Length: 123
Image: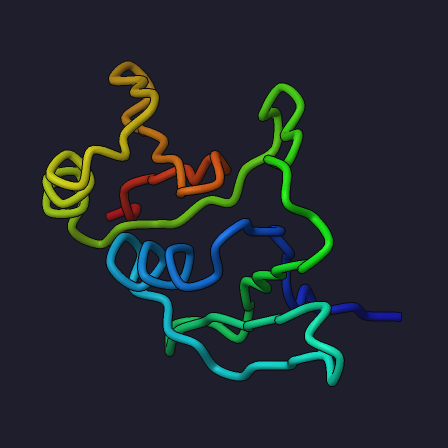
Protein backbone atom coordinates (compact mmCIF):
# COMPACT_ATOMS: atom_id res chain seq x y z
CA UNK A 1 0.00 0.00 0.00
CA UNK A 2 1.30 3.42 -0.90
CA UNK A 3 -0.05 6.56 0.77
CA UNK A 4 0.74 10.09 -0.31
CA UNK A 5 0.70 13.00 2.15
CA UNK A 6 -2.20 15.26 1.17
CA UNK A 7 -2.78 18.05 3.69
CA UNK A 8 -2.14 19.29 7.22
CA UNK A 9 -4.63 21.29 9.30
CA UNK A 10 -4.25 24.36 11.50
CA UNK A 11 -7.29 25.80 13.29
CA UNK A 12 -7.37 29.60 13.12
CA UNK A 13 -9.14 32.36 15.03
CA UNK A 14 -9.33 34.83 12.11
CA UNK A 15 -9.46 33.27 8.62
CA UNK A 16 -8.77 36.49 6.70
CA UNK A 17 -5.75 37.34 8.84
CA UNK A 18 -4.38 33.78 8.52
CA UNK A 19 -4.83 33.67 4.72
CA UNK A 20 -3.16 37.08 4.35
CA UNK A 21 -0.21 35.88 6.45
CA UNK A 22 0.29 32.63 4.50
CA UNK A 23 0.06 34.45 1.17
CA UNK A 24 2.67 37.03 2.16
CA UNK A 25 5.00 34.94 4.31
CA UNK A 26 5.23 31.70 2.32
CA UNK A 27 3.43 32.32 -0.99
CA UNK A 28 0.44 30.02 -0.49
CA UNK A 29 -2.84 30.78 -2.26
CA UNK A 30 -6.39 29.63 -1.52
CA UNK A 31 -7.15 26.66 -3.77
CA UNK A 32 -10.65 25.86 -2.55
CA UNK A 33 -13.10 26.69 0.23
CA UNK A 34 -15.75 24.69 2.12
CA UNK A 35 -18.36 26.45 4.23
CA UNK A 36 -21.01 24.94 6.48
CA UNK A 37 -24.54 25.83 5.44
CA UNK A 38 -25.25 26.89 9.03
CA UNK A 39 -22.10 29.08 9.23
CA UNK A 40 -20.49 26.91 11.91
CA UNK A 41 -17.19 26.48 10.06
CA UNK A 42 -15.11 27.66 7.12
CA UNK A 43 -12.28 25.56 5.69
CA UNK A 44 -9.77 26.87 3.18
CA UNK A 45 -7.14 24.74 1.48
CA UNK A 46 -3.95 26.61 0.58
CA UNK A 47 -1.16 25.51 -1.72
CA UNK A 48 1.24 26.43 -4.49
CA UNK A 49 2.60 25.08 -7.77
CA UNK A 50 5.65 23.39 -6.21
CA UNK A 51 3.83 20.47 -4.56
CA UNK A 52 0.39 18.86 -4.29
CA UNK A 53 0.62 19.04 -0.48
CA UNK A 54 -1.86 21.53 1.01
CA UNK A 55 -2.36 23.46 4.23
CA UNK A 56 -5.93 23.28 5.51
CA UNK A 57 -7.04 26.26 7.60
CA UNK A 58 -10.20 25.73 9.67
CA UNK A 59 -12.23 28.46 11.39
CA UNK A 60 -14.84 27.28 13.90
CA UNK A 61 -17.64 29.68 14.90
CA UNK A 62 -18.10 28.04 18.30
CA UNK A 63 -14.44 28.40 19.34
CA UNK A 64 -13.92 32.01 20.48
CA UNK A 65 -10.97 31.35 22.80
CA UNK A 66 -7.28 31.14 21.80
CA UNK A 67 -6.18 27.67 20.72
CA UNK A 68 -3.95 25.79 23.17
CA UNK A 69 -0.87 24.92 21.11
CA UNK A 70 0.86 23.02 23.88
CA UNK A 71 4.63 23.33 23.82
CA UNK A 72 4.82 23.99 20.06
CA UNK A 73 6.74 20.78 19.48
CA UNK A 74 5.13 20.42 16.05
CA UNK A 75 5.67 22.61 13.01
CA UNK A 76 5.35 22.80 9.26
CA UNK A 77 8.59 23.33 7.32
CA UNK A 78 9.16 25.33 4.14
CA UNK A 79 12.29 25.17 1.99
CA UNK A 80 13.43 28.56 0.67
CA UNK A 81 15.28 28.79 -2.66
CA UNK A 82 16.42 32.31 -1.67
CA UNK A 83 16.94 31.92 2.08
CA UNK A 84 18.31 35.45 2.56
CA UNK A 85 15.33 37.06 0.81
CA UNK A 86 12.90 34.94 2.85
CA UNK A 87 14.69 35.93 6.07
CA UNK A 88 14.59 39.62 5.10
CA UNK A 89 10.84 39.43 4.37
CA UNK A 90 10.09 37.65 7.65
CA UNK A 91 12.29 40.10 9.56
CA UNK A 92 10.32 42.97 7.98
CA UNK A 93 7.04 41.24 8.90
CA UNK A 94 8.26 40.82 12.50
CA UNK A 95 7.29 37.15 12.58
CA UNK A 96 10.66 35.47 13.29
CA UNK A 97 10.28 33.77 16.66
CA UNK A 98 13.44 31.62 16.87
CA UNK A 99 16.71 31.41 14.99
CA UNK A 100 19.32 28.66 15.04
CA UNK A 101 22.33 30.00 13.10
CA UNK A 102 24.38 26.88 13.88
CA UNK A 103 21.81 24.76 12.03
CA UNK A 104 21.19 27.45 9.39
CA UNK A 105 17.43 27.58 10.03
CA UNK A 106 14.85 29.82 11.67
CA UNK A 107 11.20 29.72 12.64
CA UNK A 108 8.37 32.17 12.08
CA UNK A 109 5.01 32.15 13.82
CA UNK A 110 1.65 32.78 12.21
CA UNK A 111 -1.12 34.96 13.70
CA UNK A 112 -2.39 32.00 15.77
CA UNK A 113 1.05 31.11 17.15
CA UNK A 114 1.83 28.11 14.94
CA UNK A 115 5.52 27.72 14.16
CA UNK A 116 6.79 27.38 10.58
CA UNK A 117 10.39 26.29 10.00
CA UNK A 118 12.30 27.94 7.17
CA UNK A 119 15.22 25.94 5.79
CA UNK A 120 17.54 26.78 2.91
CA UNK A 121 17.33 24.80 -0.31
CA UNK A 122 20.11 22.28 -0.64
CA UNK A 123 22.49 23.23 -3.39
